[in-house]
Length: 325
Image 1 (spheres, helix red, strand yellow):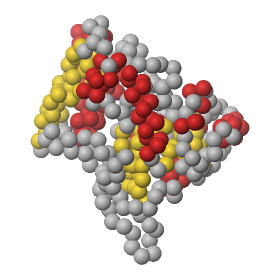
Image 2 (tube, one colour):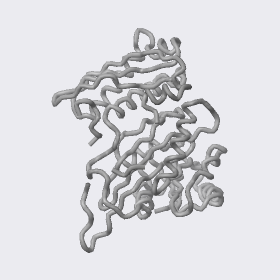
Image 3 (tube, one colour):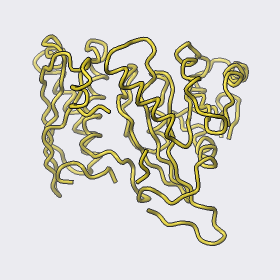
Image 4 (spheres, helix red, strand yellow):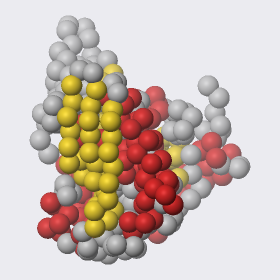
């Protein structure tokens, strides 16, 4: 990889073309702690809360969030600079164990590669819920000292006393360097998690400016925001055979004009996306435009339309053409 308090669970742990990044500090002087910088992979089974955690740690929405599994398809590099530490988060897709297909094979390669290349791994599991899908990630986790167990959604546990035996059963299966119960939604224990990660980052100069948020271009984030609205509005009706490509990006001081193409696999998907009288598409475009305007901090004109490209998610060549890794 190229380097460019209340305790709800009763537990404690401590450009014009849209290619400009969304938003190096110097080394510490004498008597200051050394600068640290490294890559951090956030991994776990699908729909366990990885994107919610990454967004909460960075403080802005970079990864799309949906109740549906398989919404994150790319590695998202989110950057957080805090004092002398710079964290480069890699929000990976959920490791797929139930479904085959070219897209899932490609997403699993992304997860495996990220685990091999990063400095620290945060393994996210949901409090009180351990499944075979969680267990199948264990052999892929790196050697002792580099993996932290983040037990998410602890605020949703009905019985506080259930947390300790749950964590003990998981910790017996892998030598985690630390265990931190968290709630990303409530911001609970996120500083404790960052402290555990930070002390394991290698010493080194920052890779990004102190105010950088991601190494992804703005047009990529915009496409993800459109895709999030699709999954939230028609995720139960529309299979995962859709993606979003930004085909036009014109940005100036007073605003931006963007055209987003939603690529689907079947003709029958088009009316689902459009909705009665175009109602679905209007809502998708309106909500995405509002989020993109916040991201750019300027007015946005967003056009969203649909194209059919049959079988694209089952052909690795088509996936690469559409920007998948």
